[in-house]
Amino acid sequence: MTNNTTAWFTSWFDTPFYHILYKDRDDTEAHAFMDTLTNYLNIPEGGTILDLACGKGRHALYLNKIGFDVTGVDLSANSIDFAKQFENHRLRFDVHDMCTPYHKTFDAVFNLFTSFGYFEDDADNLKTIEAIKAELNPFGFGVIDFMNSEFVIDNLVPEEVKTVEDIDFHLKRYVEDGYIIKDITFTADERLYNFQERVRGFTLADFEALFEQAGVYLLDVFGDYKLHKFNPKTSERLVMIFK
Image 1 (cartoon, rainbow, N blue to C red):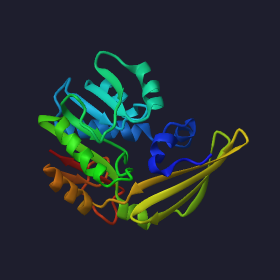
Image 2: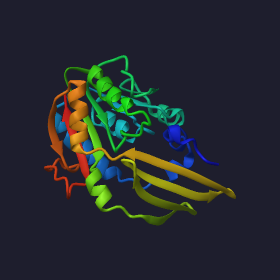
Image 3: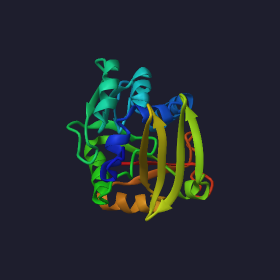
Image 4: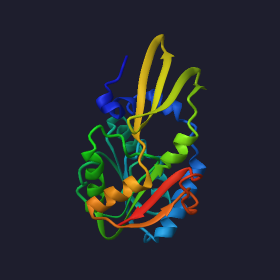
């Protein structure tokens, strides 16, 4: 089974294998980041947050738990179907393409955990920033939490095998045409699967150009989830706050 790379994220993110491979993601770190970020932005109690590309809703669930009114949207219908079991009067989930503005405005729009830069068409990157701008109320903040591409490329592990739930995931990483690419090959239920993750290796300068085109203002740049200063050589993350 080979996915169609023109929209790899619509098939790979919809498989159960995606969630198996990444099941050990650190929720403690994610929760601490949400505490730190919402405090820093001073989002009012009961304030509204849009979690853009929310996946199965792990950030959205926690944000709701600490007192916010949260909408989680994602292109993956499977992920949204799963997340909907957790809905309440201040937490809802919706299938939505982040290239187009959602029909409401919010105190904050969060795009977390490198959920940007997947598009085949470069125009969609700008459309997404413009959509975030349209989704912010006059006092709202946009946040994009991206990988620090320079650090990732410098520290790329070319090949490794990760075994999760008795599945051997063979991972191959490389850079090609400005994309950081991960080939994922594994056998499950006696079938061979091949998937590929492709993310544009955006730098801070690339984002600055997009922000300028979209007419939004970059306010702060941080290099990790504790909101320490960004260093292009040593920071693992690129966390940008704009409005």
